[in-house]
Length: 138
Image (cartoon, rainbow, N blue to C red; front, side):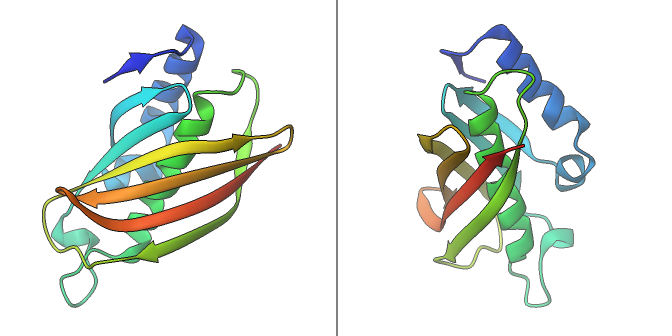
């Protein structure tokens, strides 16, 4: 895992968050890299995450994106600050039925109350999904 340009507290917060979120454990999300303002998470396609045609369920992809974007924000806020998703807009560009997905999330704008975060999900080298999300400090 890349650990650049972040405080020790921010890194520990992200590692603790991934370990303590039951849904992330259920999906078996893996943190590949994190640095200030960005995070990359991975998800292996498994049969239990597919819909009835053998394609990875869009909800699993959305959860991967939501987690990656949240972790990108965690890398830039203070340890006691909290955020929550306001919206998440996803464009599914291609179906995925096997392999490993990587969600690369980047903070586009960090305002006083709102954060805008983009994400790209790759299946191998191919772009499979794009997303734009807004979070609010709570």
